[in-house]
Length: 313
View 1 (cartoon, rainbow, N blue to C red):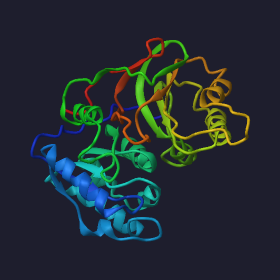
View 2 (view 1 turned 90 degrees about the vertical axis):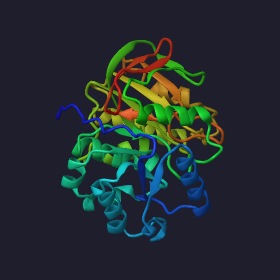
View 3 (view 1 turned 30 degrees about the vertical axis):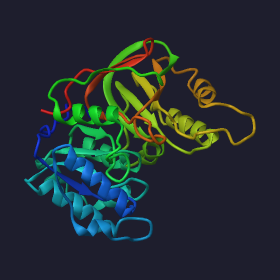
View 4 (view 1 turned 45 degrees about the vertical axis):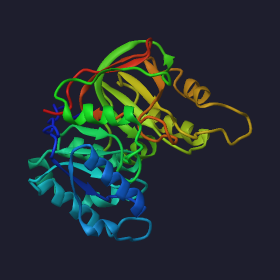
């Protein structure tokens, strides 16, 4: 298995330019405008190409166009961070057209979640850079953005000190223990889709973060078993589950996400928590930006997650 110390991108400073790309779904223009306004209100300049408003199927333009946006934003010396307009579907289709050399030579803050997970892991694996599981412009970024979400975003991408302890009421312990490792992961469906590709996720000595939305509990159970059979839990140091928003039992038996996780992971002897507020959310919920590629400590007894390293330099 490959092992490396990922590069921390330069931190974002007041007045810096944020580039916006659209690697996945097309998006609502009004929601996008509100997101741009919020980024400007936070003290940043914003840059994007008009091509992000194109459509092809459900996506924001053709695959090569969406990939070219990403390539140009990495090459653009003015752009210091890259946010995604929306997630949904389509990010994986851009990968064949991404310019590895340009990206490797220009490590930058790159933020997104859900379908963007495949790009986060591509950048972590291919460009060997710390990446960020955080808000998208036409989603969480808006003037009424939760203040806690905004604060954690800024702590992750502007501060050269570790984010430290993250502890909140939604966290629940599934299995006790305390372990440290490199944080990696993202959307469960996308983690599964990467298995067998050159961007297959490495979980050895890692703290694995997983979240999803709107899946039947049988689908969640199948995905967990897929990860288990693929050997992804053999050398993992700990597991953090997100809120698993609207992942419910459609069988009529009234099982809960806790029931499914306890049964599927009963033979996995590592600290496990669930309910971490990052990624998919319900309106008004917080969305904590997580840096992937940095050392963290999972204390399932508190329960809490400690970010031990700064994500930017």
